[in-house]
Length: 186
Image 1 (cartoon, rainbow, N blue to C red):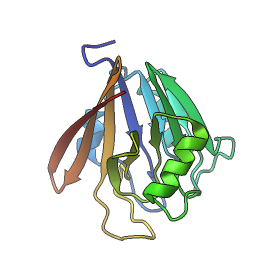
Image 2: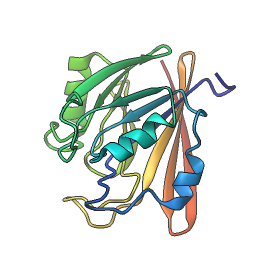
Image 3: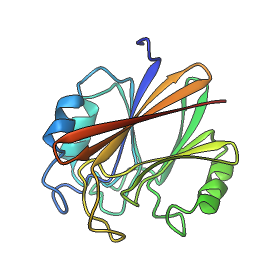
């Protein structure tokens, strides 16, 4: 455990090889094995090769099934305890309308979690709603979605320490990686 607490990589919607060739080089250089304790993936890895890459990054890898995953053994949702936080993980295509705050809150209550992580929209978001947190890592490859052809490649890193979570959102704009930070506590 580092000074940051437990580090959690939150990724999803790779869509390799169908909609993207690979993870952008700038992101690949940032994803160093054994720096993070957990990986949470919202699905649409598509191939086993992507799964193997995630397994090399951290000892605890949690994946849920997206609509394009070859591996049908991934669950539809998962609840993970990391530190003091219960985190719900699901792809997000099950939530209608997609990305809707009220619908996300309903799922959060059903799963009884502090943080709900979903994907599917390919847009990264970190939002507080009704005292709970909702996180979407976007698409790490920038793969197009049915909602928009213009997708900014992104992923999120969580630093969980005690009753506090710091989120770092990484976005790739051309050759520039921009990082934004937010914090929340229980």
